[in-house]
Every structure is written in C-alpha cells, then in structure tokens.
Length: 95
Image (tube, rainbow, N blue to C red; front, side, top):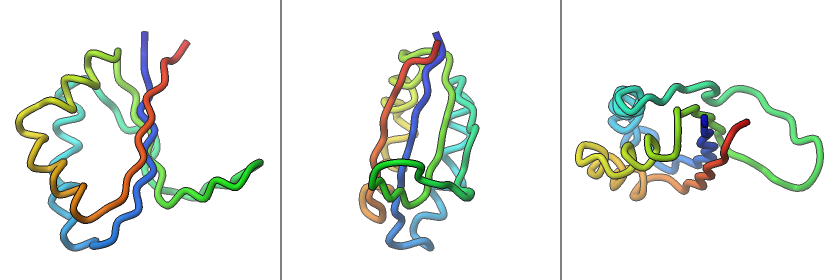
C-alpha cells in the first residue's frame, strides 16, 4: 500500500541547507520514493495551520520510508537538516 510523507520545513540557514537539498532526492528515489509536491503556493482552507514550505512524497510502503530514514548515507544529511531547519514530518497510508 502506498504511503505519503508530508513534510513542513522552515529552513533557518538556506546556504547550509543546500547540501541537504542536493543529495536527499537521490536517496529518496533509491528507496522507491517520489516527490509529488515541493514548495509552491498553497491555501489553508480551514484552521490555523501556517505551513512554511510543504513537500509531499509518495513511497511504495512504510518499510521503504523506514529504509530511507535509517539509510547510513542519510544520517549526516539528517544532522544537517536538524541543525539548520525546523521540520514536521507525517507519514500517512494511502488507499
């Protein structure tokens, strides 16, 4: 069953974040993930959610997402993200 990873990221240091942006897409792809939404205009229809920069990824299953998150090549990149951005990540199962 496909799963979707919804990411809201607030980058505090764009220049330090460049390496993360450059290297992560290949890792996501390696684990079967595909970016469906990256940034772009959005409109909050209800509620008071104020996302910063939204990203939406589709993966074949939860195991693929876990493999991406635990990939040894991702660990130093995740440290970069943690040091220069505030991020909320949600995983949701598709139909």
